[in-house]
Length: 71
Image (tube, rainbow, N blue to C red):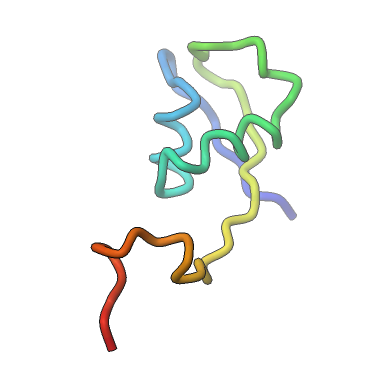
């Protein structure tokens, strides 16, 4: 079963990605998961969006050097 997010008045793609998925870097994936709403910039309240799966195992090659843990 897919996870969903129900918008509140004024939500925007990047804010939803941050709140629901933990990073604005997920904005593109969120938009691709909801092509029927791609025309929206700002959402009204009550729109249900499908949240894409988030891979918790991010490789060290995708993390900036200053954020990598040494060890």
